Structures are given as structure tokens and as C-alpha cells.
Amino acid sequence: MTAVGLRERKKEKTRLALLDAALDLFLEQGYDATTVEQIAGVVDVSPRTFFRYFSSKESIPLWFHEQGEETMTETLDSRPADEPAFTSMTHALRAVIQDMQGSTPEDTERFLKLRKLFETNPALVGKSVARGTATELRLAEIIARRRGADPADQLSHLIVAWAMATMRVGFECPYEPTNIRAIVERMEQTLAIAENSLKPGWDT
Image 1: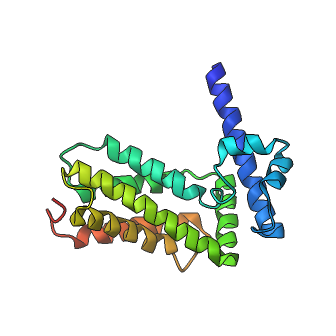
Image 2: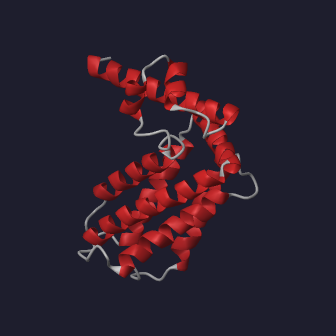
């Protein structure tokens, strides 16, 4: 293991420790009552160190948005330039699904805690929706650029909105909302339905 590799592992360990401490405190004493200082204290780091990993307390329950957006943008950047836009979006979505399939037991526990946090904090749901909207706007700009269109191009925005709506329907998974395997399976099924429902060439 190189020195760089060791540093990266240590950074990731600290990031996850801060995330776990925050989720536990949010659920134990409430999101609003929890401070950055308390979160940092559990991990025995300074608030200054906390801000090296998270931009704010609010960014913690929205971390999955940032992770998903990063995965999707990286995937879109790697797709062939002449690939149909919706096909590129489905590859981006499946990259997110693949990440979920590789979830560790610890990842699953974080997911369950996060889900419970949103269930008990309606205000955070609104913030999550707003963060998701921002992601869709950035993805639409990428799709428009790939299509050689204006950033405000309606079809580019529709392509992204349709793809993300497909993901949301699958993610809701009303039958087993706390089972990641069931959610992944439903997301795949919903994405397949969307692909089979569209006429070839609609996204060109």
C-alpha cells in the first residue's frame, strides 16, 4: 500500500466516522438539536476538520445526492459521443444501481438510518427534493451539450426528467422499503419498462 493509498483510506475512514456519528446523533437527539461541534466531538476531531469532509451539517443527510450525481456525471463523460441521449442516461442510472448492489452491511445500516431520518423530518425531505432538482439541471446541461443543443433545450431536460422519474419510481419500492436488494431489483425493472416503452430515436 502506497503512502497516498494509506492517506486516502484514512480520509475515507474519517469521513464515514463523521457520517455515522451524525446519523446517530440526528436520530437520538434530533436533527435541529445536533451541532457540528457535537458531531466532530464524537469522532474526536475539530469542527475545522469536519468542514474538510462536509460543507455543512445539511450536506450530511444529502450525501447520497452528491455521491449519485458524481457517479452519473462521470459515467456520462465516459459514454460515446454519438450514443442516443436516453441510452447514456440509462448507463448513468445503472452505474448508481451497481454502486447500490455493492453496498456493505455498514452501507445498508446507513441507508436505513437515513430513511428513518427523512421519515421523522419533513423539512429534510424538501431539502432533498431541492437538491435532486439541482442535480437534474446539471445533468440536463450535460445531455444538452452532448446533443449539441442549447442548455435550455426542452428535449434535453425531458430526457433527464424521464430518466430520473424512472429512478424515483423504482426507488420508492413500496413493498419492502428497507430492503436494498428489493429496491435495486425494482429499479432495474422500472428502468427496463421505461426503455421498452419508448420509440427508437425519440431522444435524438
